[in-house]
Length: 360
Image (cartoon, rainbow, N blue to C red; front, side, top):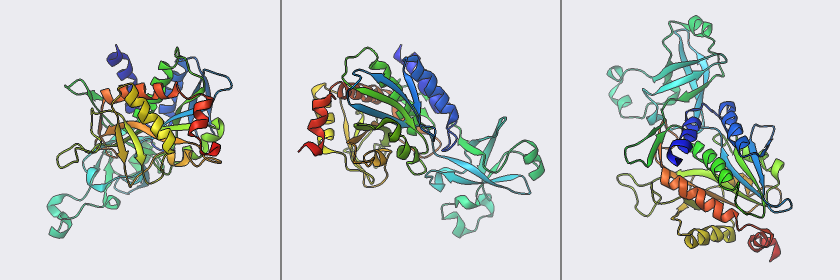
């Protein structure tokens, strides 16, 4: 049943179009799912959304946040020949772009295009040895000229989204889709709230997702003001390093959720981190420490809110993030949800005081 019902939600989330600043389709799905748990819904003025589940009206406030947006592009110019020049929304590596199909999303309809460049047959030997620069790429939507493009309603500023259908691979565990960074986190927020519906806990849980993470953790800056959290969980993906030439001691698919010990934006509260790790070990939930000297998540802003909020990143390893396609393990998602539920059930007022440095 989990595979049929819950994977259908993940399919809807990943196939929805949600460039940074254009997250409305994903937000609509989240709203519908959060309302199924019979929760109140709150928003910030940026578009971040959270459902509320109260265990104790006066208990600690717990923030669970994925992010709605995915790496994408924006139309920045329409050439006289009818091609689209584009700019990235989020971090892209030029080498993954050429010949990929994309959706150009206008006010009234969506057009399919392909990312193109100068043909390799006419490149100089020197050009062939380099990664082709994004600034020289274009998107071909099959138009004859600029006037035809404009007549279709395509305008500068329209978002451009990668195309990749959702698929569960033959091992019945590996999920292939676009935007798993970070619709996996959105899914986890909803799933944990559902599992907490009939569970005993002594706190107030705010579960949902921020906006514009991929362009500078912007929703993570504003969302805490509507919650005033006592602790925060950023629900995100980490970099899987289990491919050829990878490191067997680094995160990989199917070995458990990730718990981030370090990234470029945050060192987590160590007492909070130890609580998560001890909980995983107590309940025999596999987990993988994630230590990254680069990159970051919304927790980089959460933990700096006002006078500081104990924060941590829990999520799943993913292959090929920041490209048109990515992969995660269904089993890792299930264990991430289980770990989050077990940690939340412990977070009463005394436990909160035990992890806060201000009571030393």
